[in-house]
Image (tube, rainbow, N blue to C red; front, side, top):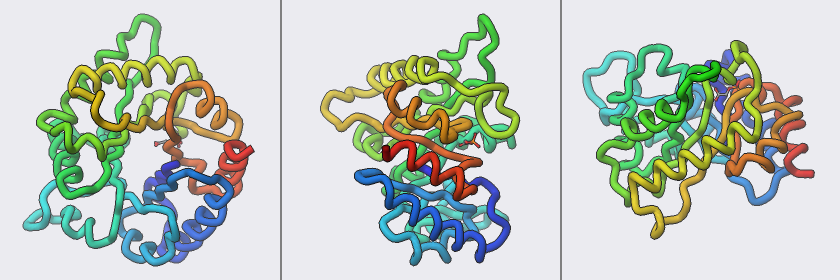
Length: 246
Ligand code: PGA
């Protein structure tokens, strides 16, 4: 279960409070890895309060350190103890992040032992729109030059852009998600000989809520959820986790 807090909350104090509430809620679901991805600025201060949960970065720079004003070099990121890093989120792509940069970030994170949560997903689902080639292209470009050895630390999140955030036009159905999950597995199987490595985990993200969470988990073949808005609202997050625990 991955929480993507995006640019929330507004202070370190609130971030700590949210982390502690998340930790309490996470105890309700056994045998599950919980990952919290706060804004980078809060990572260091949350390190000691995360308990058995892991911390993840929402973004970082692909160079270890150096003259890159405003960026967070991945060496500094590693010092915060992050286990995961989200790469290629559609909100970053919308801000101009290109496949080439995503590929560099994927390689930098995997080479330093950080698990990458690679986000892929199409912009729309209008009738006749060919969405699978878009997803394939995102996977191929992001993973160019990544070795089979390193994809063991890869998690893929299917995040259809049209189902994400406040601008979502509608929710994705478990059937729609399942089709893409099967497709992603096929693309990865074509790129790598996956028979000899543990299966790559696939998550779903986009308007996950207490009503659809267990339907998605039970009906689409995903291994977990990437939760945005609902992860910064403890009341809603708790209902999601409870719906999965029952
Ligand atoms: P949402 O965001 O749950 O608010 O739709 C998901 C995401 O962007 O990862």
